[in-house]
Length: 98
Length: 133
Image 1: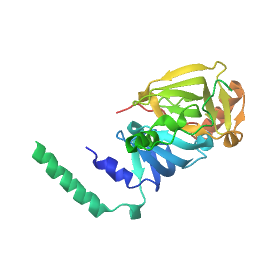
Image 2: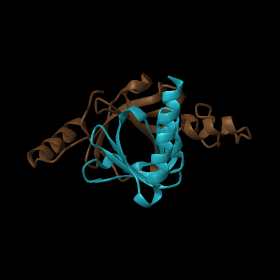
Image 3: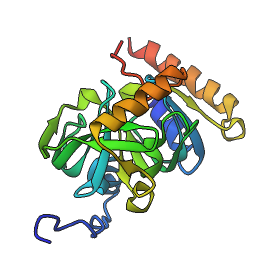
């Protein structure tokens, strides 16, 4: 099921904010995403660095998909109509397979 | 430097799209780099990445545990080889040595004092640990 993987791939090169389950929020440019939705960010900076400054020295990071809580996306980069259509298509084909 | 043979090399540029995807998405670009690894229990390990696998299990050499409070840090005295199970990894990033100079190494006692100062002001000292759901 490649649904969200394909969606994230359209956001490569865009600025996103990844909020992790330990409440850490990291902003950066999406460099890559894989089948586990592991995320690699370039030019990463921590939102609210006064809270956790030790990550200031990190530029490029790898985030394990399993620790992501939210991914904040720029609204203009998301075509919700396209997303809805592809979701409907995915559900349709899913049902047929069953 | 024999111990860090590929430190300054780029990974070989592939022409095959599947290989290209693997190089782009995987930890290949971090091999032999000095990484800061944040674990689920809130610990930070700093070391050179020697190897990894699909589950983000990693091997770090010349690695030690770094405790950080604000801009002050203290590294554990022993350094060695860490094999970290991927489940425990939150994130890992390459450490920019220029930025690292903005941090100040202190003794463990000093660090504890700084942590208590922050705590008394009601400020967080480090990202909280969490368990998977």
